[in-house]
Length: 238
Image (cartoon, rainbow, N blue to C red; front, side, top):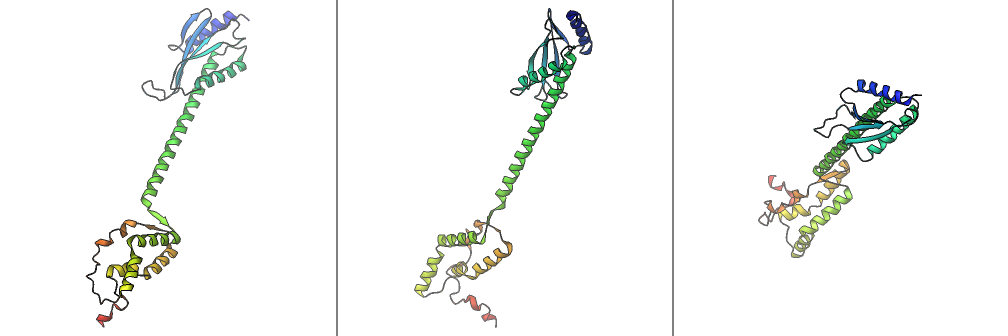
């Protein structure tokens, strides 16, 4: 095989195929570069991938491997350059004995496209997942506190203890007086039964504690009618 003639013929073909992009760097031995990029590459943004494939003929090319380098890589992630060179080395092994630069450039072009599309898809999936997690967090934030029967009764007991309802009930019994309207409301055991019935039917409820924080603002104070009997509230109308 006339290696010099084979190399010269391939150079002429490459100049025609990559007209305007093909650049000869040296003549002895032949060293040249071909730019490769993805379809959506834009040098003004971070879109796409781009690099220069630099190839140097060895004395016995194409029966021995050429020297391949990557220069001016744009938007490459870590290890992309090493991965691409490894991929091209496999192509060289498969094509030894034949001129192969066009095959190498095409393989590099396809590799860039596949790698970029995979990276773009992975990024979109990460963004979609992050958005879903954010929406879920917002939904839970506005959902309120969900409780079972047991946790609701525990909360109610703690809430009543905080307001001193049990102490007021005991004090009223010792003094032999009736509870005020507000105290009657807070100590009414029938509320417990209705709460339990509601919980049994709904299984889970949302509790807004702020609804109980303004009880002091209700017009249920010690000025209520002391003769009011909650068990005989319709007696006056008969």
